[in-house]
Amino acid sequence: MSEAMRTVKFKIYRFNPEVDIKPTMKDYELTIPDKQDMMLLEAILRIKAMDDSLAFRRSCREGVCGSDGMNINGRNGLACVTLLSALKQPIELRPLPGLPVIRDLVVDMKVFFEQYAKVKPYLINDEPPPAKERLQSPAERKKLDGLYECILCACCSTSCPSFWWNPEKFIGPAGLLQAYRFIADSRDTAKVERLEALTDPFSVFRCRGVMNCVDVCPKGLNPTRAIGHIRSELLAEGN
Amino acid sequence: MVRSATSLTGNGVRDWLWQRVSAVILAVYTLFILGFIWFTPQLDYVAWFQLFQGIGVKLFTILAALSLLTHAWVGMWTILTDYVKPAYLRLILEVLVIIALFLYFIVAIAIVWSV
Ligand code: SF4
Ligand code: SF4
Ligand code: FES
Image (cartoon, rainbow over all chains, first blue to last red; front, side, top):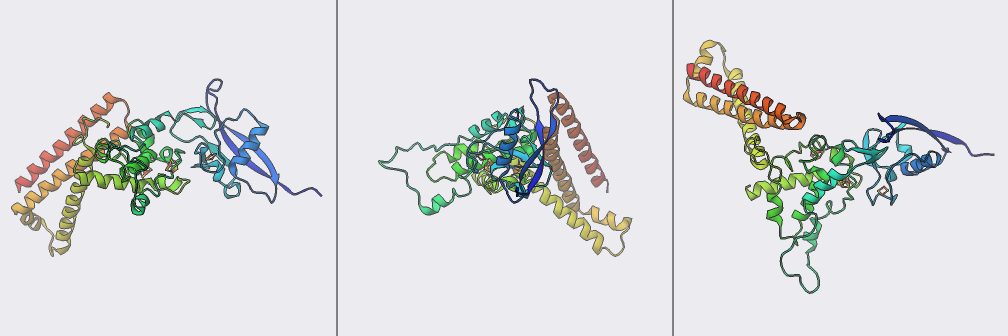
């Protein structure tokens, strides 16, 4: 006897700027064994096996590389850690909102990474390096928890209205989380300069506390809290 | 660092602080007026007139009007820089908002001082 099967329905955003004038939503159906569940990414890979013109990014397939961020039924997330059974059908897949579409689910992340680069996301320490390593107490190290885990998937920044309206001026939740990751690092000596670079009305203060970023982060991080910490530091510095 | 000449102070921290401080002043003023309405047995012209004759109330009212000006400008500037992308159109709207707010303020002073 053959196994019972079921059909899963999809609507996927398709746009190839070389030939299409307008984007369209294309219907797909995938037949899978009734009892089987899988991650959304696996389902998309099977769709691609049927229609190899579909473009999307993925790599690690386990929520580590941050490349398969997309808009799933209206909410940003990683396809590789989203269970198919948890989604309402037809499952609507669109590219991350607010960024230029290169093709289908692939977006141009240039402006996102430009904002990330602005916060100088690396340790700055002008003291001579010690023989072995720069030590931290467990308490100092603990301050970086909830910050260093970010995989730069851009789910947060592309769900943030303030980032949609001012992507060149507002650093966005992902960049600000990393800004705070280095402001909070006891080994970093550039805290004052880092804060000074953020005092303008856009870089940090465009955050209106909408908290979409917290809602979507697939790593469970809280950029709004980090932004709050930056704001407190700025006020304490008296800028 | 993003430059912006038209924001209230040109500095995000100060803009943010002014918006909060003015919000607190407006809240206190609102409570004060509500309290007056609530606790005045006979709320008529004479009662209002007497209230606004005090120099303290006059100054507090002007302070509240100033706070409204500050608060509204930070808010309107934020909204305009979010949603109006052509620079010349935004500048026109910004000037209109400033003129309107300024006129409101003049009228507020005129009213308070006429009592
Ligand atoms: S904070 Fe979360 S949602 Fe934002 S880029 Fe990092 S991992 Fe992705
Ligand atoms: S809390 Fe701030 S950064 Fe996060 S989505 Fe809202 S406005 Fe954007
Ligand atoms: S494929 Fe790497 S995070 Fe999903």
